[in-house]
Image (cartoon, rainbow, N blue to C red; front, side, top):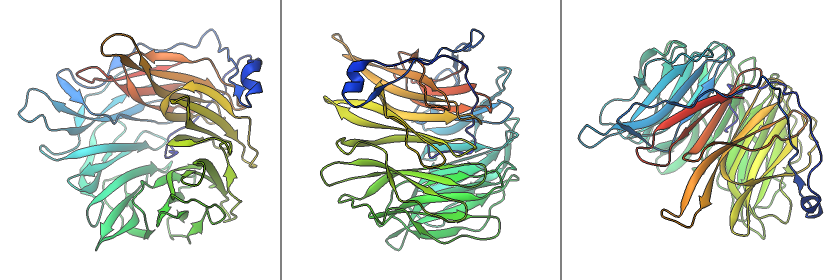
Length: 442
């Protein structure tokens, strides 16, 4: 995640007890067990995409402050020649009512990687890659499309689109595009009526996907990799684009930086997490950039002995406390680790979360949240593996709940939250026809 403004959180009441001594002896804490209230429950899993359509690997979900969700994905109608993919969305209310499926992209276009975000009342923005450019549309809280399809990028090829929406509804998209052989990070507003702001060229870029977040007053933070050798960030208010902050000047990275994520609290204090490559060990880092412009020294999140993978997730609550989850190889298997980072910059205990990859995080207003991830499980029979999606809740104090398998046939999960710890998860079935599915809980 890039950390998105739509993700919120709530308190989960429960008991936390000690972990296993063997893991503690290895220098990594075992996740504590969390007992949720007896009234907590998951809804039935339901099919989001249409029967007869086959989806691709990019489901997304955004949840507003009433608990209504907008779900987005790409899929194609198998009954049509060529089975070209289209970006589609669907609303599901907090009460469980589902809206009609809407198609946002034109027939025959080459589309991929939709990203979505919602404001407080459910008005949303959807951006994606289409025919070498970045495009976007607004979607009303009812699910109806607002205004025409808009081309956001100014040159091509353009890729890596991300989006955040302010509480009042202004959307800001950011991406990387190529002009005259050079790459640039660019941002642009997409208004509630579907009209566009002017393109904002933020600076040179390396080609990595940027990250974006927004505070409660509508100030955006965009972070990206510049030149492969540093991570930088800028703030964008309604009237100005701030100066560039260089976050990584004190870190040596022989193979460059990547996998940038942004979390922003209610007042505009930002946490930017990223991966450093090369040298003896790849590492996971985080930088804290206050709303007044004070930049703290980078914090090493992973252990110095770990060889960290690129997949990681960041979520920041309204008070500025964050959860960071990343992966490393353990005996050839991807293992997920988690760590709390307080608003004051205090790093919590590293917690081993089990085998998994493609993590995503959602948090509520108070800092309680959910991690979702996929795990490829080997088997002794054809096809010799299956992919499952797992969810784990965590508390604002850093206690972790037990793992819950949401499906044994699904991956690429994403999660969103209401203001009070009720989470909506979306994933794609791994078996044909790759149906998009969703569930809400606990």
